[in-house]
Length: 164
Length: 135
Image (cartoon, rainbow over all chains, first blue to last red; front, side):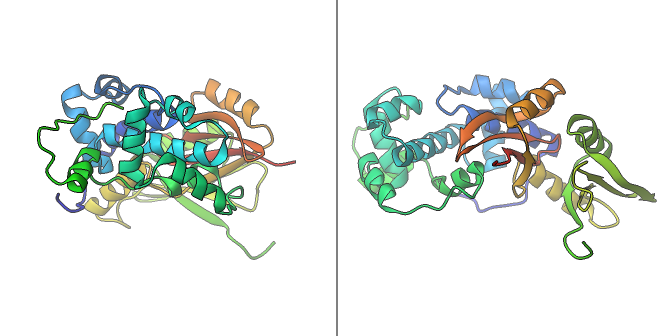
């Protein structure tokens, strides 16, 4: 992986890419295929994912996963919804994928996070919600699939794909 | 009040565009708009807050070299600037008016933490949270 570098992207392009990121933020439970995001940004599908990654440091699909996990963490903390309900409300199509991705990103299971979050006293109601969610955003700087491979060592014959 | 914060500035990509946004869409007033060559000192003010000015500054010469100016514009365009908070009496009403004027909302009003908040951006990318004042 290359280190951070100064961007040479046109600020006008960045502003349009930000619009796609904002749309993911506003509705991370929805499906965000590249075609849809590229249309929001007015960029060709071929260039969108690369431009987004260059601008924000991670590919759009991974960004979407972090937002979903972040929302799920907030719901685990703040609501009494079951883990199954939370998985479906945050946009996963299967409980298994949710649990696995959640653990890959946070290092803990949804139920463990729920127990711990409730034990911690929060004084967050004086901070605007967007700041709270940004501060709680899981730091996902390598691909979930890479992380899985690193943890599992060499998994033979396991061609896993991310389908959130 | 004779002491305190008087001006806080934002970086914007185009001062005319920013001026139109903050005045026509948000209802701010121009406080100061003076030029010296290429440099333009532009500040606006919330109508209810005469002791505070919001500066709308364009990165560039003579303050910044071209590469620095572009880096600053990029930071704003990526939405990476610090949070800004606008307090309103009625978040949903303000959302309705501002949407009708074409403000780009990033979050519709939602009930949260005992109040209502929404989110929008200015044309350059500066992100605002709009929070209903607690009564």
